Amino acid sequence: MLSVITLLTAGLFVGFLGGILGIGGGSIMVPILVLWFKYPIHVAIATSLITIVATSINITGYNIASGLANIRFGLFLEITTALFAILGGVLSVSVNEKPIIIAFSIILAFISFLYFIRRNINDDVVTDNTAKSFFAASYYDALNKFNISYKPINVIPTALISAFAGLISGMLGIGGGVVKVPAMNILAKLPIKAATATSNFMIGITAAAGSIVYFNSGFIDPSVTSLMIIGVTFGSKIASKKFNKIADKRIKTLFMIFMIFVAIQMFIKGIK
Image (cartoon, rainbow, N blue to C red; front, side, top):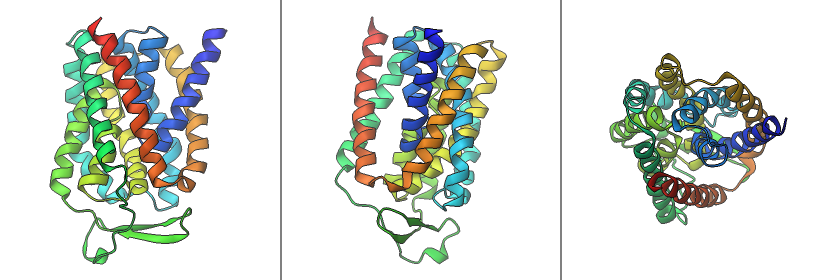
């Protein structure tokens, strides 16, 4: 009974924080399942990918209705991202645990560094010639109470990085949001909320593609997965109501602090 409650509580936490940060919760869930619940890394990855799909479905409806998610840009990026997610899954199931855990920690540390150097930069509003871009979009910012318009730039380089996000998603079970969000925010110049919402839309597709390999390899644990999905579902619903009222700078700071903590814990686990 205790394990049921703790798994549900963990899922609630993962769903809320993952929804706020646009990372699907995989970078939170995998360390929790490996470090605290002692599950094998491949089972944790498989559970994460399946749960990410549920998270994405729950929060994407709100993000689309509010105009935060850039659907056209997200679908374009998913062309290569989903294919590389399958490739990542194939690579992961053929490798033992420790290299995957160390790779996980390195990726998270690198993303934390990106957010550290960008933490004080205000990149809310991009309004130049948005109507001339196929991927241009706008949304209403409830915190600042005005419309924000923007036009993604560096589309092809962002697509290449998104493909890499798909690869590590399939390998590590993290949805790829830890790479997609900063790529869209820093490189494509999407406001952080638009980047986060678009990532939440994309990660469901990416995770579904990557989970195929783990399902075929027998790494899905139905009991653990179902409990995490229930917790994550409620957590992501709470996040969807709070998301547009949180300051962008606060989102970046929260993201950075958590990634540093998790990176250290996973690296220690990998070298033992």
